[in-house]
Length: 145
Image (cartoon, rainbow, N blue to C red):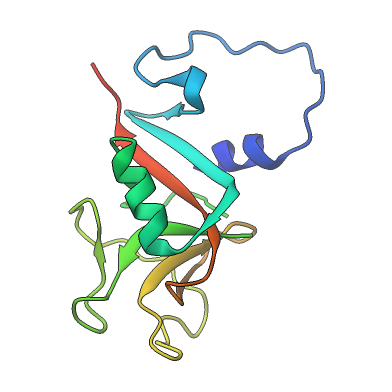
C-alpha cells in the first residue's frame, strides 16, 4: 500500500517510464488503482466523517480499507476499523479478521470516546480517532475477475 500512497502524493515528474499491463479488473478511469487482487481509491481531496466516508465507499461497491497483514504503510486518512459496538473490540467494516495491528505509541487510548480508525500516512501507524473529524479516506474492493 505504501507504494500506492507514494505515487498518489509524490510530485509528478517525467521519468520516461510507462505503466505496463495495467489490470483491467479495476475501474482505472474513475480513480481506482490495482494492488494485488484488490482495487483502491484514495480520496484525499474529500474530507468526511468516518460514517460518511464509509457510506461513500459502500455506494461505490467498496468499503473502507482493511489492513490484514504487515505492509509498509506510512496526513491521517480513515480506514475501516472501529470499536463502536464494544469498546476495545476492534473490527473491520468488511468483516475481515482484525488480527494485524499497527497502533501508534499509546494507542488505542479512547481519548474522549474515539471509536474510529485512522492511519497516519507519513508513518503508517494507526490511531483511534474521533469519528466526526473530517479526513480523507481509502476505499477497497475486490477486483473483478
